[in-house]
Picture 1: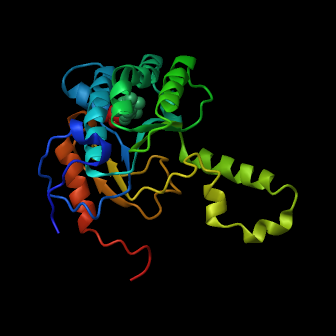
Picture 2 (picture 1 turned 90 degrees about the horizontal axis):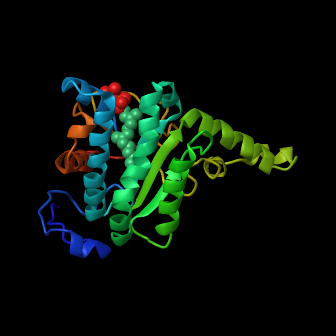
Length: 256
Ligand code: FPP
């Protein structure tokens, strides 16, 4: 049934009472987004690539607000992959500045909107200023219990799975007989996403149709939605469209 979504939880004062044609009983709990197309957006305008990333950062604010509004529980944003280190130094340096640029401006609002900031990725090789900004946001939002805003930063899924296997192995404490009884949940616990539920919906912008080493384990049963829209052009309406498409899908998890 299509319903009029009313103000959600503690966000009442920030949200207009607007009509969004989505079913509030079938909201994906966890949405993951590959925010792609910043470079092409900039190139089309004769701007440096970092201008696209800056514009892309501004989109995050709108999407977080909309996700929170409709009752999404977790939003994971692929902000920097382990492969992105191969980019020119000036671009990498700028991408490493984005979390603090974003959080310097947005953290008070995130706190106010009951958002919980999390990090999925390796802190190794991240500049101190990036780690500090994210750690401060995690600390300042740790007592909130609303939308989880999870930044995938310096994240690569294969290396994540590999380190999980190694940690799981060491946790066995030489007790090799238990190997045959290891479950999927046992391995999941050692993934960087920890106790975060698997995404229900993956969005990728810019027309690329691939996973790019993103949450390979966690996306096993997610619904995928791809759009040609470049990330800096992505709006709340596109987010809604993705949710509407998701709501028309029949999720069978391998059953009938
Ligand atoms: C891919 O587009 C995008 C990235 C590698 C960076 C995404 C980062 C943001 C949108 C901002 C992050 C902000 C915070 C707060 C963490 P691309 O550069 O590969 O685009 P292209 O394929 O058109 O070149």
